[in-house]
Structures are given as C-alpha cells and as structure tokens.
Length: 71
Image (tube, rainbow, N blue to C red; front, side, top):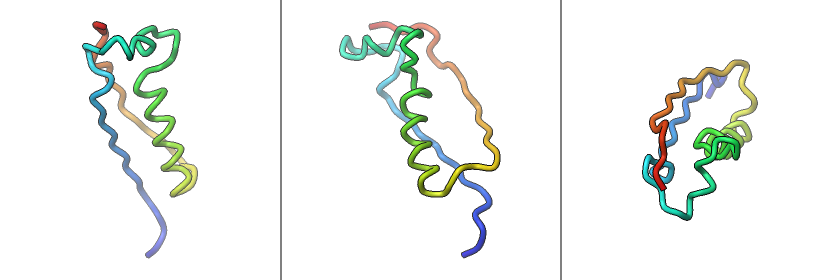
C-alpha cells in the first residue's frame, strides 16, 4: 500500500458532561487528573500507537467545554 503519512483519531463520549451522576464524583477534582484527556486519550493513543507506531510529530487542539461540573 505504501508509506503511512497521516493518521487522524477522533473520539467522542457523553460520560464527562457538565452534569454528572454521583458515580462519577471522582472525575470532578482537578487534582485527580481524571479528565477526558487523561483517561480516554491514554487508552486510545495506546491503541493507535500500537497499530501504527510512534509518531514523528504530534499536534492537537484542546478545548475545555465545561469549566464547571455539577454532580
């Protein structure tokens, strides 16, 4: 097929929204480092890198959609 030149990964979840159930209380404190990036990106990037290898370069766009969370 040729040389791999680009890979794009898009992940979406509705678990970490502005209003969360009490079961997700552990995801709210910032000091727990339990954000969408820390959890989902870790899992999906591990899978991606296992499939295609480590990137020569990496870029991303990150937006905080919910600066406040209600439990």
